[in-house]
Image (cartoon, rainbow, N blue to C red; front, side, top):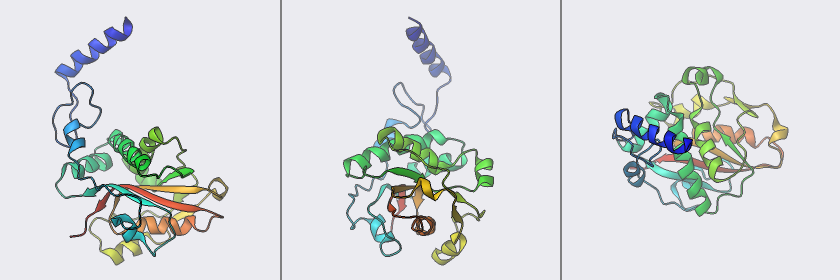
Amino acid sequence: MWKNIKEIGSSVIGLFYPDYCPGCGNPLVSGERHICTDCLNNLPYTYFNNSRKNLVSELLLGRFRFEKAFSLCYFVKSSRLQKLLHNLKYGKKPEVGTELGIYLGQELLKNDMSDFDVIVPIPLHPAKKKIRGYNQSEAIARGINQIINKPVDDNSIQRVVFTETQTKKGKIERWDNVKNIFEVKNPENLENKHILIVDDVLTTGATIESLAAEIEKIENTNISVASIAIAKKM
């Protein structure tokens, strides 16, 4: 009885004070959670498989050892996805990352990429995390965890250098900006593990390459990579 009353109350509140989709701005309807169905159906999905012929693998090949690599979508400027990711990073909406992470986790399952042991989101510097209130990559990792029940480790590796934004930097500048910015604090937690590195958007891959360089110092580790989006080559 109380459950029915609560559901009716939520429906009435939603009627007068609806939540809005951060991708298109339309009100969310009953059954939609954080992102509307229309946006989810019309994201620029990559439809990659986990072979080394996909764009993520091509971007990272030869830069460090990895098992598999995957991105859910292409990053397209002025798209709904860009609006979703902007709200994730700057709009105080970590739930958007978790929801996208759920879809990413489902695709990892479909593409036989669930054989990792632990999820490591790209670490955010403590000062930046304090400003933002959360790590957007960790929010994505939590979504993956809901589909693939593997632990999220956001403590064993830390970001020890506060870097400038990468947005307007070229490839070489991006690499210089992220060299030696990570430090392994608890290597024993990751020894003998297959680690899935998770990021929001892959552009040049410099940040992931820097993190992978630190992970490779840990005994007997394997690396795979997953992201919500990858910048499409023009």
